[in-house]
Image (cartoon, helix red, strand yellow):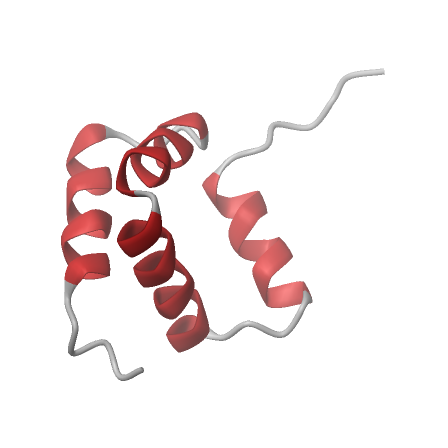
Length: 68
C-alpha cells in the first residue's frame, strides 16, 4: 500500500481540520520562529518547502504586527 505524500498542503489541511484559521496559523509560525528558529526552518524544509518560500514564511513569522 502506497503511503500518501505528507507536505505543506497536508499540514494545512490538518490545521484547518482542528479549526485553525489563517490568523491562528500565522500565530503558530510566529511562536515556532520565536522559540526555536532553527527547528522552524528545518521543519519547513522537511515539509518540502523551497528555500525562497521558507525565507518568506520566516520573515513573516518574525513580524510582530501579525495581530496577536
